[in-house]
Length: 126
Image 1 (tube, rainbow, N blue to C red):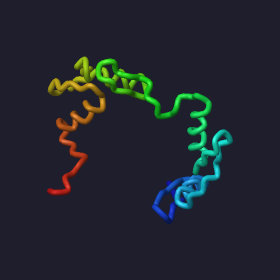
Image 2: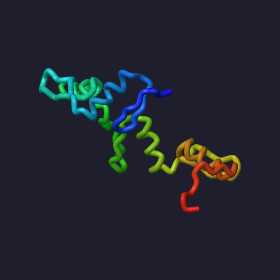
Image 3: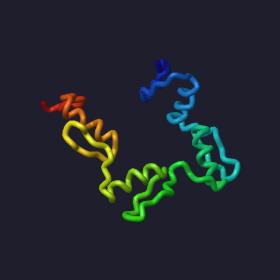
Image 4: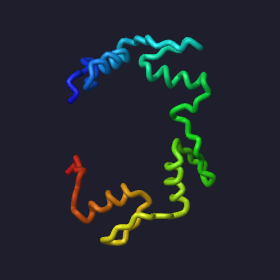
């Protein structure tokens, strides 16, 4: 349950403190200040992320894992491993009904709906 709602944009949260933090995005208030360079942030977590630029810690969104085949970059080694299958053609997930093979388990799960008749998405035109 998320009983606290922003009157400005409809954002909902379970905690009053989260709503207070959120409201700063509308007021422009930036109470968190970097002692190193004066950078100001709306939320404490944003300042923490910024501080990594001074400590040399790897930024949250850095993509250090790179595919030697095409240059694709990933944030996690497992994501790169998944990507590499696009080059090798490996499709380890097999449908027992028809033999369809998939690179990802989620793709096989989606495919299985063709056998069950499940149609989770409806067309707005018809």
